[in-house]
Length: 81
Image 1 (tube, helix red, strand yellow):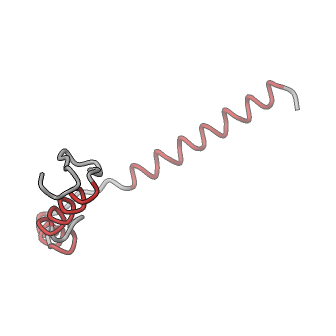
Image 2 (tube, one colour; image 1 turned 90 degrees about the vertical axis):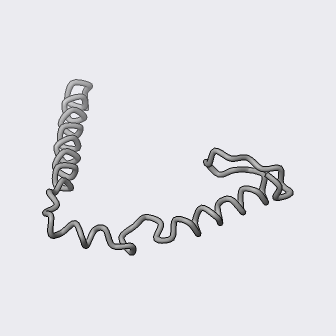
């Protein structure tokens, strides 16, 4: 295979990939009707269903390890921030 044919094939493949990604991303957009918003606001649809408990566990873990995992606080390892 010579270079121009390989380049053309590569360009065609990139175009197909771009079209596929564009279709996949546009297919994910949806309008939420007012009567559907109640179902999306239910607690079991949340990313963290118990935000207070999750925050407490993150604080305890960060204090014990003295290495915060992406949170802003830092601890001394003894649990006495």
